[in-house]
Image (cartoon, rainbow, N blue to C red; front, side, top):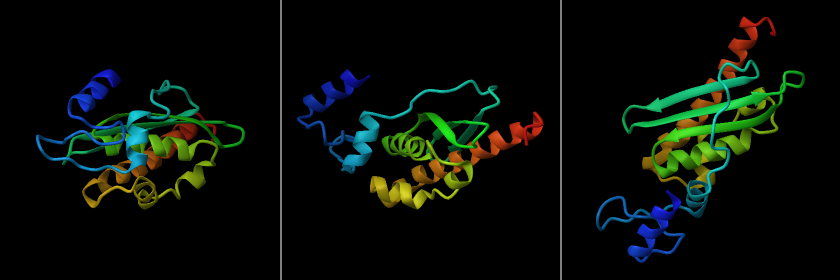
Length: 159
C-alpha cells in the first residue's frame, strides 16, 4: 500500500510531505503531524477482545463512514494502560487521530485518559473544521474502551 501511495505522489509530482489530491485538481494541505501519523501510524493492530485486561471501543460516524476501533490493555494491579492498538477505516485525519490517541493513552491511568479531549487531538494535528469529527471519534473511542474494560471487571468480579 505504501508503495502505491508513493508511486501516485511521484506521478503527480508531489513530495513526500504534500498530500495527494482528494479529487482531480483539488489539493488539501494537511499539517505535517497528520501526514506523519498517516504515513507512519503507531500502534496499528488489535488485541483479543475476550482478554479480561483489554477494553475495546468501537465508534463510527455515519455521515462520513469513518469507523474506529481502539483497544487498551490495562495492568490490573496498577490500573495503568500499558498498551493500546487501533484499526480505523476512514480518511487520513481519522487514522492520524487514532494513532495519536493510542500514543497519548499509553502509560496513563484510566481516569486520566478520560480527560483527553478531542480539541487537544485536533489542535495537535491542526485539523481543519471539516475534519473535527475525526478527533471526536478518537475521544469517543477512548471513553468506550475504558467503559468496556470497567464493565468486564464488574462481570468477572474484579471490580
